[in-house]
Each structure stands twice: as structure tokens, then as C-alpha cells.
Length: 316
Image (cartoon, rainbow, N blue to C red; front, side, top):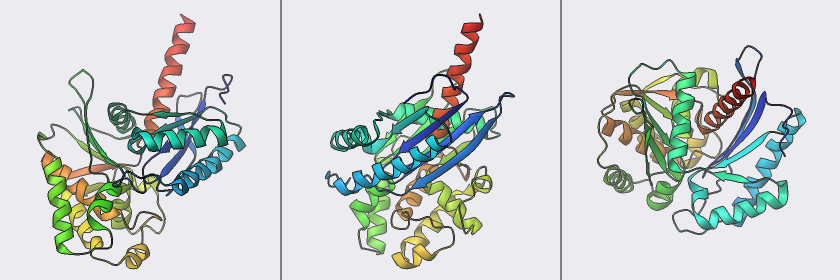
């Protein structure tokens, strides 16, 4: 489903453990990148991650969401489509079932990213879109199944490490229906025990993913997600920790009524905020800048870079 005649636009679909994200980006004649359309759907493909049991219902729900986004992209006259997957699809049973359903329903294949690729794409998007310092930046992306810590190298490739502290995974293992101090402490001890040998950050720290965006949205009391206000917003480590713990002790119905809480995230947000705050503490970062541009943006930027390089080669 690739239109080789049009190289100035791309649609990217990022299939995560908790959410499917959609981006349609174009590049104008002046080289400016324009977001024409984007969206998200909380499909919870990774339901049952802690037990290792995929949900056929979640697979179907995810494919339906993708079908809707694909229709939007094709309705805009675009057929350069890229589907990428992260932690949940690095697990064999989920990957096999989802890939088969996606091909049968939409005739699309999914590119399952390695943790290193995921981290590199996150850093690429941050560098492209934020005014970061010259020192090596560090990016933290807390997803549903895992979290990636990516550090820029001094002129070399980025160093990326992946940790099993995703918000869905931690929620399923430790929280369930429990909202007790003991459950919170058990989860925090698990996260701390997992995040070992993390040296302090040398430059700017960027946080991305649903947890970071939700924390910013809650602090700003935005009735609807606004990427323009979230992108570049600075959050303190103490704020992330306090918001996460405060939300944890609320009932699920109260969480859902919070101004700024997205659909499908109320149950897993506290675990994500816990992990994010612990990462920043390990990095020695008192604060971090939020990037609303995650993996899907990195895929788009890399696509345009490759196209530009091919154009230069052809011209030569």
C-alpha cells in the first residue's frame, strides 16, 4: 500500500501496549513539517501482559482502531503507511496474533521495533522539535509494557536500555483493585529494584509517552489534550511523584472525572507516574521537559531524512 509517486507525506501508526497512536505528517516545499492529522485510541492490546495471556478481544479492538485511522489517512489521499509496534509486539504470542489479524483485515505488515530503535527514534523526535542544549540529551519513555532510557552519545550512536516497568505491566502485577499503601510501596520497591546502575544525566532530560503527557495535561487542567501546550512543558520530579501517588489513592471513577485524564489511562496512570519519577530520581534530574512527539514522529522524521538523502544521491 505504498504510493511511490508521493514522497512528501507519510502516515505512521504506533501500536503500543495501551494505546494506538496515529500521525499524518507532510513536508512542504520549504522543508517545513506539518502535522495534518493525528489521533489516539486506548485499545489496551497488552491486557494480560503480566500473566502472559493475550486477549483476542484486545487484538480485534486494536485492529478496528487501526482500520479507522487508515481510513482517515487514505481519505486524505495518502497511501504511504507505516505500522510500527513496541514492547507488546516484542512478545511472541501477541506479535503473531496481531500480525496475522492486521494482514488479513488491512493487508498491512507491522515493523516491530527493537528497544534500541525505539530509543533512537524518541531522541530524534526530541532533537527535531525541542530547543535542547548542546550537551548529550537523555530521553525517558514510559510505555505500557516497558520503559526505554536513551542517551545521546558524544558523536556516536545512542545508548539505549529497556526496563520492564511499563504502566500496564506494573498495574497488573501490583495494583489490581488494591489502593493501599502496601501496594504502592511494593510497586515502588519493584521499580527501584529494576532501575539499577543508571548514571546521572549529563544534559537535558526529555520525558515522552502517555504518562508524561497526561501529567502535564492534569497540571495544566486542560479539558482536552493540547499538544501545543504540552510539548515543551517542564515538570518537576516532585510534581510527577506527587500527582501519581495522589491519583493512586483515588477511586477509579474519581480518576476518570479528573480534568485532563484521557480515556483508557485512569487505571494505569499512577504506575506510569511512579516509574517516571523513579527514573528522574536515578538520573539526578530535578525536572524534565515533556515531548509530545514520540516514536511515531521519529519514524516520520527519519522517513523524510531518507527521502532527502535519496534525492541528493539522484541529483548527483
